[in-house]
Length: 149
Image 1: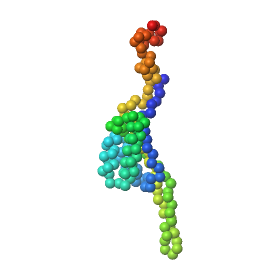
Image 2 (image 1 turned 180 degrees about the vertical axis):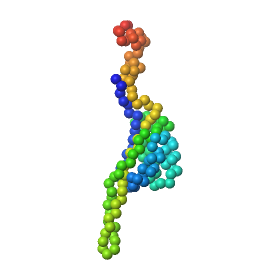
Image 3 (image 1 turned 30 degrees about the horizontal axis):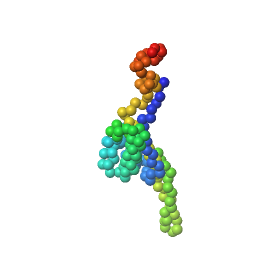
Image 4 (image 1 turned 60 degrees about the vertical axis):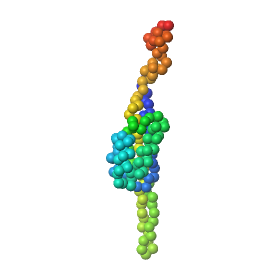
């Protein structure tokens, strides 16, 4: 039986106070690139959204190194998406005692990194052969199957 192994780690930033359109402009530049190249791009781009995205990419790589025990040189940005969040509503005082509503947009950013050195699928049959079934003292693999000793 073939089982699927976990090869992705992600970081999620919610209620970040910036427009989703402005953050997408940066996200489209880094999607599918390697981790090291992404950090260089984000440091050199002159947009305000870069700092929040930089922190999320760094956090996703830290999550990958902790959960997957992977090296940062093998990571690529596999998924980067922006969703619109709730709008923070304020009232601005205007002339003659009136007020004017101001909406500050927020967004949710999800960054997923994938380790390209890990196999995504694992064959359970081959795992059993490699771990415990293959024993030369019992006649090797075929001796184990047909009961030869």
